[in-house]
Image 1 (cartoon, helix red, strand yellow):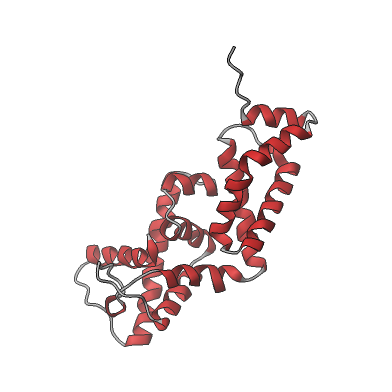
Image 2: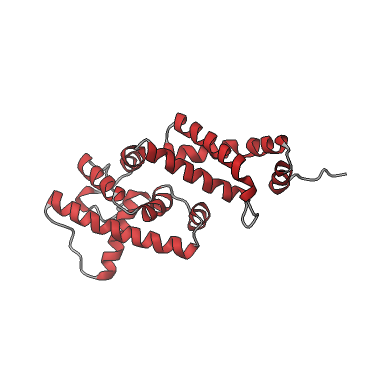
Length: 218
């Protein structure tokens, strides 16, 4: 007779009835995935391990709040994202380390920084700082979507689940974040270089805004 598969929901129900073994099984199933996701945000093993501890502590205390309206993994990963953001804010690393490291890894033609080109070169220090500054100045609700979608490369659906937003809301915030980023880059670029690439239409302007986001790393 085929053995019945024990689902996450079954483990959650057992844990709420007092089974520590059920909670330990949940940890065993998701510990590696939680750690890997935490590493994507913190880029530091020690911080990622602390995030894992925070996540499972939160899970232990709040698991009764899981109502089963979405997959348990999606609910858990939202806790990971929140814990990682809190860790980075407390250590002031979100702005100083995480985004700068991400931008530093990307390539862009800094003589035409609003256009993503196949022959792009590694961005220089001034342009990298300009990009980091522009991303950091985005309002948090837009920056979070931008980082997850355009820098980390998650899909709209994944961002929707992680941040508890509808897909239309994700798309709207992403669009607005790209436009805000372009405006900020425009001012910073003008201050640095004194001129901007010539723009001829509103459509091209939006395309260039998208290109700047690409350069930051979709």
